[in-house]
Image (cartoon, rainbow, N blue to C red; front, top):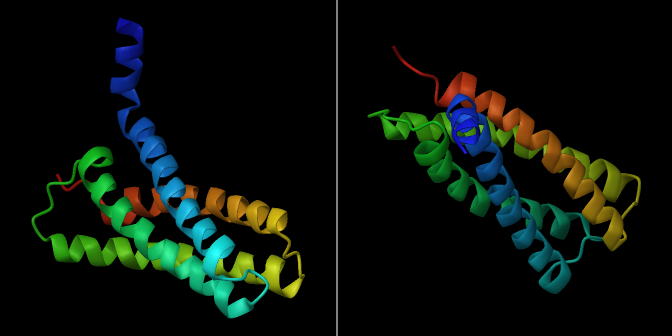
Length: 144
């Protein structure tokens, strides 16, 4: 048990980021799939992008709070500046996700439910990695 605790202490930030990332991804996916499989149609480009944006907004609120509190333990006093940096960095990954979904689902017409799921998961994998890099280097950087 001590070895596990030591490993956790050594890799706390990465482990917490992965847990929060998985939870954020679940928030994003559940929101998106509820929208796409109930009220919006993935075969319609505008509705697909609407689902992506709505799920992004909900997940970014969840992600900021959990990353600030549990992952990076930010003590930044200028929360507005931190939120703006966070949102700007996440907008870049949102645009990447939107491009991937547009290219594969709309442009290449890989728009059956299974393809929507596949391309959503692929885009989310890329987004998780880039979000960590941006958060670590730009948003929640330690100020000594």
